[in-house]
Image (cartoon, rainbow, N blue to C red; front, side):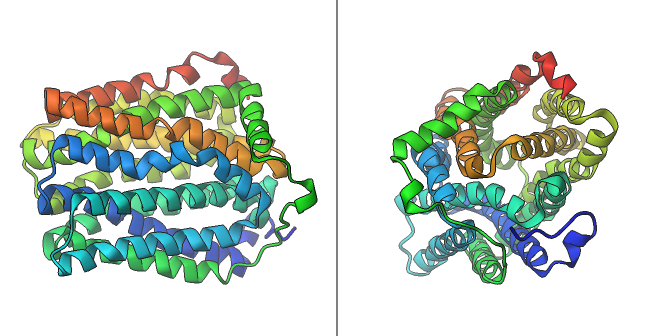
Length: 408
């Protein structure tokens, strides 16, 4: 297995640098899409709450529909080609939006189809991405490697929404998606230069798809800490689905911010997440991984309740403040739990473990999107975002009520 060694040795390896570059570029583009895609629906097609909910559900449905089989395929095949093809598919899907606008042919069903393809690409990419890292850095350096990746991701989350909001304000939302499409294509090009020794599972060793899926689920179900993390993730993504539907309408039509300010305010969460990514390895070194996870979960749960208190005027600052503090806790928890999962899982099960966790966590997200659409139509944006925040706070109880995590 090709690994890059520990400490600063990771930075001297060309493949690791290309991998980081591809990830950073793709993350920046993704953050632009997070802002631009729902704004295309709201500003260009005047979408309703329920239509925004359908768009959110379409983008996340793939985690529920194919999340488990993807884990088997990632374990059977080499992971780098999966990463490349996932980027190419997402880039082409996004290119179709500005093209349709130019032809005056953009419709909501078209956006739903693009969202579905983006979700399919994300499922393959995320599972392969998490499973590919140990091939580059080795298990002893996973915490450092994940910390670097999370720092890059949160740097993108910090500046990407602001850039996306500015692009939407300056050149319209469909054209802003063009930047993301290009970023995916550049990411695929960089990944083409990454070299790591990967061995596909020999055909003679493969079993029926159902059996291999079952092995991954049984592994997660049989590990008590992984069970709790999966429960937290599922409840979080259910509530995130509600939040994602309410957020653009709450910001644009209740707080009356323009797209540029909207993108800037979304960067508040990334400020905290970036700080949390830096703190995560230090917290684990000082207090232990379990205490770091517990403290991060507690902070994330309490702080998110500040954000819905925002109002026009000076109180607008409460939205990014709550998201930022919650982001600190979420990043500290997330990096440590991911490194724990990667460290304890045998290499031949990494894809299925990650896919099982993704399925259990993200499978709830499209349900949350539909629920958010219904709640928004019934109770309005402000009440719906409060429901999402309360759900996010309560979602952390499976970890906060499990004291064994403190001993990890």
